[in-house]
Image 1 (cartoon, rainbow, N blue to C red):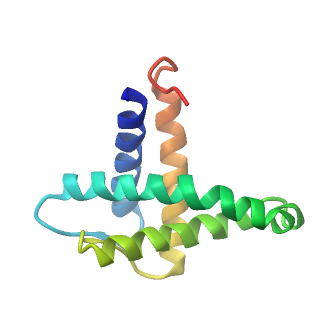
Image 2 (image 1 turned 135 degrees about the horizontal axis):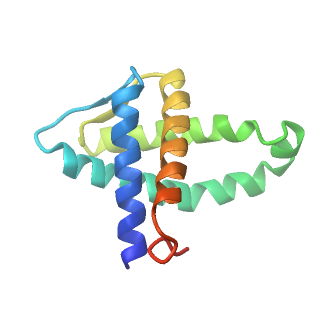
Length: 125
């Protein structure tokens, strides 16, 4: 349970940093922390459900592009999270593919760095 809470918290921090760094990602609303946590949950669910399916179906594209198509897939999943949060009126929006592309990279890098800082006993898979 602690690992799940920790992963949501890491995703929320990574999304918050993406809103600060990337120009086309906006966060609005009265309670931004709750918004970030809910969007982090959506982000985790979308990545856990859709990403393995996309990787399996698009295996040839991953091999053909030496994995670079993964950056495009991450950007499209980031746009999907934005669409879901817009439909739920959460106040998280990504404006355009370039913002989604850069946001997905920022979230991946920040998540990676935060997982390096977190001790392994708390970061169980």
